[in-house]
Image 1 (cartoon, rainbow, N blue to C red):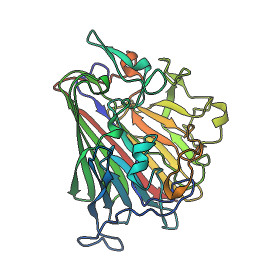
Image 2 (cartoon, one colour):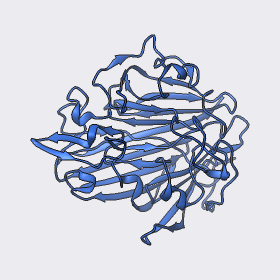
Image 3 (cartoon, rainbow, N blue to C red):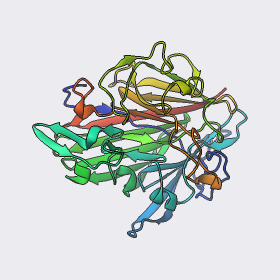
Image 4 (tube, helix red, strand yellow):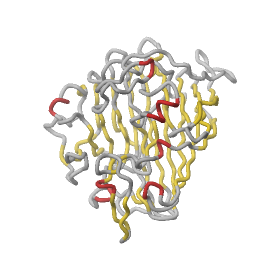
Length: 390
């Protein structure tokens, strides 16, 4: 993709659910439930998308939440603040639904203290060293909000703005289309960037997240989705079994900035080419997993990136992407200070993130696939999260 005039990317994760079990333990939250319309599939429920108010931001901007249901009864809630996946309800092997994403029951928590729970992050997901890059001879200084580095779009990234939204209904799927115009100079980035993100819940038990963006000046773009998953619906995630379709990863320095090396995963705790539990070798990784994996597919074509199996519930999540990279984060910075769904504290390793993406700090690493979107080109992205049980 280096030197390409068209960027194909993929963002992230999710289906959506009720709101209670995904805290390390939790209770059902009081979210709007979709009303059935139309005829359900045999043995199932009617597909629908419903909108309700979900509060206001401190400046008085109204926030709305959409409830999605597919014809098999899977449920999701997405809101306009941060284009955020608030809940995702998926059945276990007995058919019991449970919320598998961390977050809050009300808007206030997302506004006051959210580590990007379920949000769309951008303009640049992940880190840019010292918040600085040079493009076409000009040097740009971005906001630094992660020590000396820039993280997930800056102080007020896409996770902290209210997006415009409209429902989407199509054959075999219901969803919500979000749109946002990021103005020239926002958080230090050049150019006006017009972004759309569509969440679709399909009757194949998939959550699809598709992205499209255009810009009037050359600018870095690396959009992704930032749900914290717990397929057990509670407890820590160390027993989840992970398979990542990657034979390399990008080592990082103390600030979690890639060194520029692409290192083989073989004979290391980063080798998930065969299934391993998250906790099996995590003690061998200083600070826990927070690393970019170089996917075998190389980006540009839809390919399976990762499979996660949770033995107690029997839930399986498979993520396919056209992105060249996958950031695996094992919830290392959760420390019990956040009280989430059900009034329960989110402890260390209570959830994990799998962010489909281009590599961190790509604007400063010419050997990494390019993230530069130029006028006249279209950034396109698709991530598919498919759910099943055994």
